Amino acid sequence: MEPGVLEKICSQIYRKYPEFKGKRPRVKAYASTQNLLIFSSQGTTADGKSITRSLRVIVDENGKIGKVTTSR
Image (tube, rainbow, N blue to C red):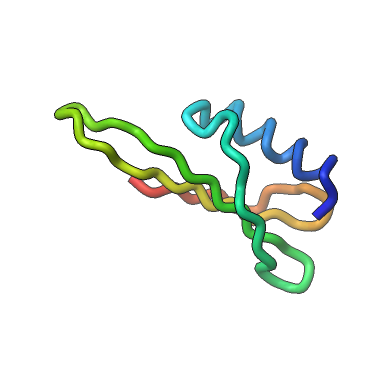
């Protein structure tokens, strides 16, 4: 994936999901023309316990976001 396309996708994700701002995604091939970006972030619950949140983003080679899913 080209760096410029990746930066464009990351800025869109950071705007919608600010808790992932500054986190770099892992990039995996998903299909012949798609990639899977996985963002991970640490958070804290109301009772002070640590929790890991994941955000999965399916994108095409042009940078169009197809689907976004997140863990609780």
